[in-house]
Amino acid sequence: MEQAISISWEPGKIGAVAETLASGSDDDIIGLEGYVIRERSFFGDIMLSMGGMDFPFPRTPVLDFIISWKFSLDEVALTGVSDVGIIDKYHVTRLALRDYEVVATSTETQATVSVPFVEILAAILRFTRSVLDEITREYPDLLMNDFMENLFRGSLMRELGEEQFLRHSAAMKKRFGRRTD
Image (cartoon, rainbow, N blue to C red):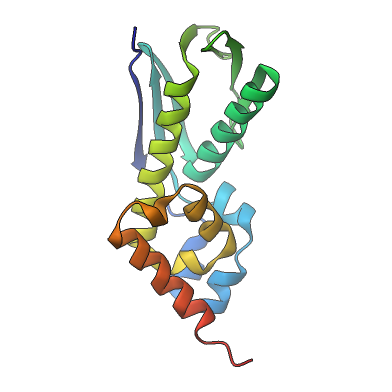
């Protein structure tokens, strides 16, 4: 039986990268630390729905959400258990692998839902692509930053279509094409 898994995001404040993006300085964008982009930027209200159960993540840095869930799913595949902890959030989602199902438990409400591992992983990967496409369409120069470029390439966004490929190529040309050495 297929479980319905959906993830939605209502973007909020840009956060810590706003000033750097407004400055337009390529060197400042390139020099942004990964944790600043991951944990202090691109906030929004995220709703993860699995098998009829909602896991709300209000005012959450979306890239931290993505990386935390991806890491936890990797850990579940390797060890069978993991806790998804999002920066500055008081509740944790506990994950446990049971056969081919992931049992997710909210530590806030103790509610539990079981969903196929491949379906939650696929949902996180689709959400990653969607968010990265949205952010880099709005702020293509962020792809000059190593952290963002690695996320973009790791999600296979570059291979998704011509628009995404050209966006990535333009950022790389802007970053590396201006070298004087």
